[in-house]
Image (cartoon, rainbow, N blue to C red):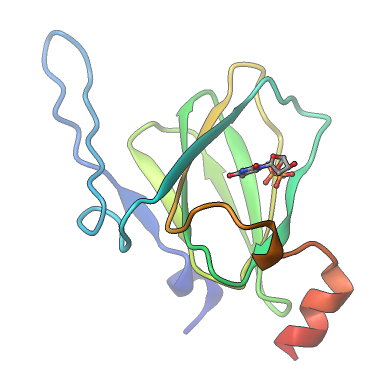
Length: 135
Ligand code: TYD
């Protein structure tokens, strides 16, 4: 399976009407896991690169609920860059994919849904170590 197929773009139902938009994301339905953790990143800007890690256990969905950012995904061989710029779209990131988030607009709010509770030990933060494991 190509990296792009492993990390599909997800399109969420927009239940908006004349009062405004409403986007619903249910675990195990619109996304392929049960949501255990939610966090969001804001007040980053175009000068920073975040992420720079892979996770042994966690799966994620990234959604820019406001503003825009980019995520560069790699499995050590292929590279795939996704522009996150719509509240009703996200990207699914399975285990063991290296990710860098960057190019944050000043109004960016990057929502992250995770399949696990936080465990610092499941992070690989050294790219060389990651490449060795993926070999
Ligand atoms: P970090 O992994 O560097 O964030 P990013 O993925 O955006 O680069 O996390 C920043 C700090 O927050 C770090 O000290 C770990 C802590 N943290 C938690 O305690 N729980 C969490 O769920 C997350 C994502 C981070």
